[in-house]
Length: 275
Figure 1 (tube, rainbow, N blue to C red):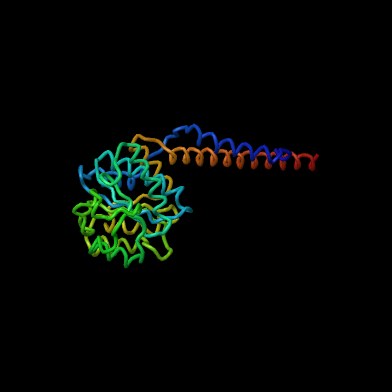
Figure 2: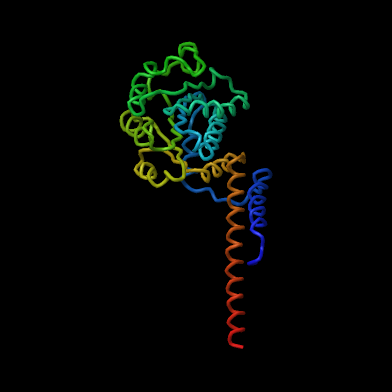
């Protein structure tokens, strides 16, 4: 074991990570209560209800929050809900546009079933502004079409016209952070609010769920994979969790083998010294 070429270990780790990404194992996974509760909140949406989703994250968080966005869009499409996409981060509309292709693949029509309104400036003040008067902030969509010409926005005047608002949030940065959404949407407007956050933000956002200030909370890649399982639609999150689990298993096995080898080696040395 001590003489093994490290390159062999590197190749082994590469294989156990790459193979599940290409062909997921579908390892057993228990769906936790927060994910089930979030799923139940979305499942209460009625056909024709309008839901706002805010892509409040940049490239660094897409690997965790992108799969969540895709799963939520699939679920909402099955409920025949209308989707309004926004972002408090300048990079967000690009990721929204990529995720919304899921709806196109399900036969939904841009402008009639969903729309991407792009970036709104001002962070918390921007949220407060459109929550009170929607068209004072959003005058055209990301494709420069005036909001008056977009059928899906008919009747949308304020935050209270949405059945649910979901922020997929990357955290601090001066934009629409979770506490800003809680203050302006739940506290000020009394509109149902849910959050999807990166794994590192889980501990700081869970109190909002426990206090009832948000209706649901998804945390990182694990929640994304759990949501895919509830939808019976395994995707990239399931594959990534398989790869992560396989890599952890191999690393643990190597640690155990290394320690056993070390103990046996030390035992043999002690025997040799006593002889």
